[in-house]
Length: 272
Length: 341
Image 1 (cartoon, each protein chain N blue to C red):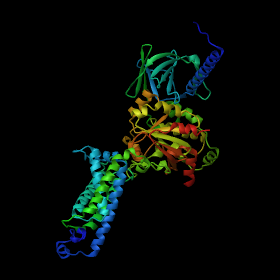
Image 2: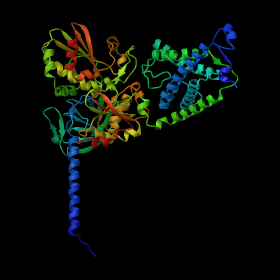
Image 3: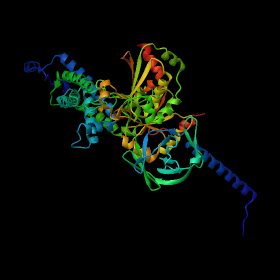
Image 4: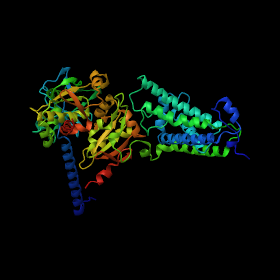
């Protein structure tokens, strides 16, 4: 005997379908949110078939746990998804560049799974249409550097620098400084704390252009104790800022002080 | 019946002449001094045993690092050493100055001073490892440089031992009742030490507890420039609300929890999430590309982390530069979600 659904059962099924649709759309929204806000990164150098990838633009999203690789040589951008351990092809039409330099992937951006990646000695290796692509951790930037070379080494520094807001009151005081001041920042491009704090100093340098305060940067290797400058200067950790007035050291800034470098430098100068 | 403790007391550390002249009745000041020595040295041994009993695993690690596990497993050596220390400490506090207590105590003190002295000497020669020293008899609770460890151990124990030596009981009769009490207490506290890892004693056993300034958590020596503090590793803790998880990133307990951490790291209105790990650069790379964490992991020297936990993972909540809560294991994620409006 056939059994037909009654009104109440149809209504119940309708409710269930509505809930399922809502859940799916919420999940979709969450997924979409996770694929937004890719920031410029300079963590890796990328090789395709043994050659350096020209015109590389690398982006990273902490939230998505993914890197986005864009280059003219690639037909479509590639997503390195660390959560699924896979390489995914992304439709260029669904890559949206924002004014602040970040990138969002629109819904349905990923259109093909190109397979898994392997990790080998601090490198990621995978195949793109039969050609081997390698992401290698960049060697550390060493020795005396200018802010520009930091930005070139890691575009993420420039991005973070632009996002930092300086304290107007402190800036006025620093601009009014009459003495010759030099601030030397010892850092490591391999150090996550540095990648958050050094861009703030770069922003400060930009804000103090034309003032009596000059900035220098000095890159240290990962094994700092091997570096003679570390020993000579007594650097115990990075980042460390040394403030000089007239060539004479008057104070040091470490870790938490560099969160607000303008306030920290002003404090050292006012006490000198 | 005379008390065996006072029946035959002889000043063994005196000159031979003095020994013969005082053998039948030492001056009362000697006995008073010896009693003071007993109390001081007994107290030092008990405090030291307590500090180590709270975290016997760290003590066992110390046994291994000193190469003292050549006959028995490190934990067995640690337990035997703890029992001896508890027993002798209680015996001294109970005023037992018998030679059968004195000489083992002297051997124990000599051994501690030898261990800290050896490290101090190595440090003076520039051979000491660039690590925070929790050496000597106080376990992980006290941060001491090799020099501090040696001189503190020496000054706390050797003078007290010499005072006891002024009036050692050489009677053939042992003070059985007091020794029995010391034995029972020693055994009891050794059983406590054995079970301590499963007891909720993290705040007592480590330097990490509510109310402290996390930036005061350091390791290494300022003298040789090896000092590292948490402010260089996680300066963000100075302001705002932060949840810090200390973890062995290769342990299954942590890797299986990564999806939870990933979700929590990007929720709104909850504290900022950080993970501290003493893993190598290679291990961190493998984790990043093997498990896809979406939270930040900060490399932390093991010397900084070791005094902050008994077992990993351990977590703590920081508000505006002060530790306000600690958790054994991973934090109770849902509690933070519920506390949000």
